[in-house]
Image (cartoon, rainbow, N blue to C red; front, side, top):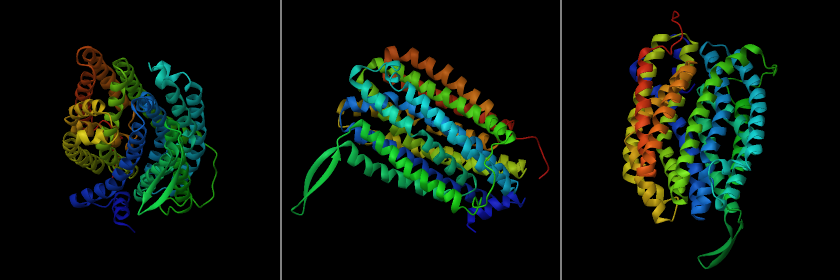
Length: 471
């Protein structure tokens, strides 16, 4: 048995844990989760870099619909989380049969849900760029990119569920490795699909590389193919190779009301939060769109670059969801609270370091995605504004992972709504007229710091914990 599995077993069996064991468990679960998050973000970074090399219009066409893709992807992730958290609770209570039942029912439910979300995305794809204020130079490619993305959502949803269940069972390594593999596949597919055929010479030998020359469309297809292969492998591991859950046993796939009701209670606020957060990002895009193609591209590249820096926070958040979920299932209230504090502290420390790296390397991070000097200068300047907010952003990210693990999702979603709509968008609307894109990013930094503060206050209150039960 791996060390992380032995430490999780201590939670389930009610054994005491030293500070070193607690820290070791968080680190062991966080590192693979961080790698998984970074690899996923790297995939979007690579897409942006490859598309950015085609010019500002190609970059802007992807950037215009980027926040909407986050919205639809987030809605699918919410469904996966609704079932994976239930798996964590049942495993924490040593109810493996119950966990297996949730996985079966969740697979059916998210497959149907993902297909519905995909149909909605395909239906709105011709109109979305126009709604977002795009111009005729970028609308066609933006529409095609979003349509292909939408068509892949059922596959993405099943892959996300399998990965989330594996993580909640304590297996962080497999989802991480497969997500890194997906990133590699994305690079390969993009290379042949985005660019035209070309020849080059190595050691006097002429080599011909074929290319489909599909541009923005090639980037979407390449990502979709990488997701498909990863989804197949992720589900194979879950259903055939996972000893923690052992899905090789037969059972019913009929979705029951208690599981679906609990999934709705957990997942609906998460889905609402995704609408709130991404809806606000879309509104930010609408605010930025009148500033022109350069501003749209710089904003998109800066968001992508920043995401590389805050992904470690989401990795620690994933670990916190797993740990807190199993603690809640085992009914260990005091240990739940102490591990939650430790997870948040670690996340803030990691992202403080990432903020420093983002400040120092802003020019290089944006420069990798575009040859345009004007876009690079603007993107780097706004990226440095955000660096100061990273520690408090971590507080919000990891605290939210703690609350999700405890099944407390409604109040945190309302907090996110108030913060992003009342603080960020209000400030952005006030500042954009005089400060342009810089004002939008100042508003973002102020709001992230405020959000981190209110999440820390809720964490300290312990109102997110279930009712006290004997350990």
